Structure formats: C-alpha cells, structure tokens
Length: 101
Image: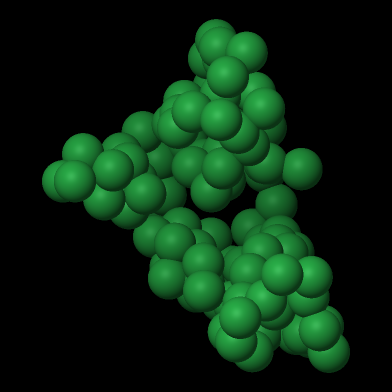
C-alpha cells in the first residue's frame, strides 16, 4: 500500500519493476516513474462513473535513473486518513497540479 504515487520513489523499493493497482484515470501519474503495461482490469469498480475509473493492475518498470529517497517523512493525521494532501516524496505531477489550483 502506498500513501500516494510519489512513494514509488521510496529507496526501499529496489526491484526494477513493481505491480501497481490504481484507477485507470491515474495511469498518467505512473508515467513519471517509468513505463507501464496494463495487465488486468476489474469488470466493475464501486462508485465508477465510467470504465476509465475501474481498478487496473499495471506492471511498472522504473526509469533506470529515477531518483529514489527515504520515505521517512512525517505525516499528519489528516494526511494519513486521506483528508489532506501530502506528504510527497520529491516533486510529483499530483503536487504540481495541486499547487496550480
């Protein structure tokens, strides 16, 4: 389980590839970290409004020179429950999008 996609930068992830499950609408966030291959998709996902909101299994192959960092950042209680954004490991698409609002 990842708090958000930036935790794919966690230096404890040493494999050149990992499997990630997320809604298909979030696949663009994975491209910051490497190349993706869709493996499977659910037939239906709770609260979906379109087929692009279905949970999808991806194989993510990390970019070879992806900057990794320790994930020992402090999280507020609101962040831990998903009621507030962050924390982020390094700059991310999600963080950049949040800041531009």
